[in-house]
Image 1 (cartoon, rainbow, N blue to C red):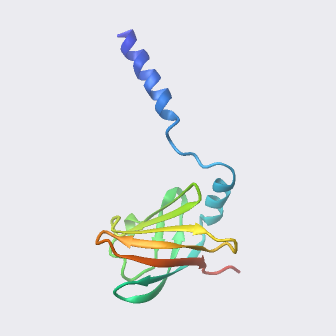
Image 2: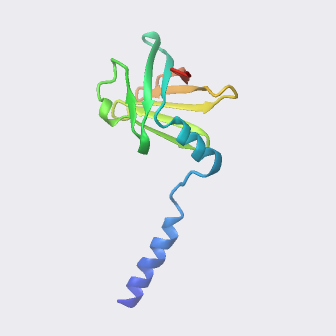
Image 3: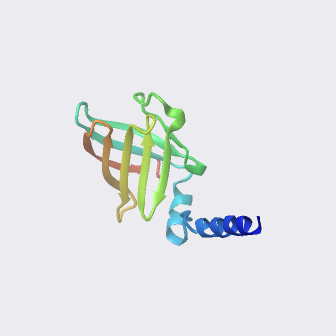
Length: 127
């Protein structure tokens, strides 16, 4: 019984280091995104260029203002090692963007059908 408890404790301690905790610049970048609204310009393969806004909320919640987002309550965002990831429509749409020197983001989007497209993001109201 004591060995079992000790093993459980050791496993918990070992696994606690597996979670990614943002530090330094990344934590500041996450804080700067929270509460802001950004304009996405996506060059979709079937529709051409579409533009819509997203708002970053705490704890990774993303508010999409796209009329084509059929499941807006499950949209999420994350920042990991400089890569900003947005997932929408029950995870069927994913954007992966990196921050550019001017503070905007650029990268690519893809869906479950394997289609890929370019995407840029800039602050919707920098004022």
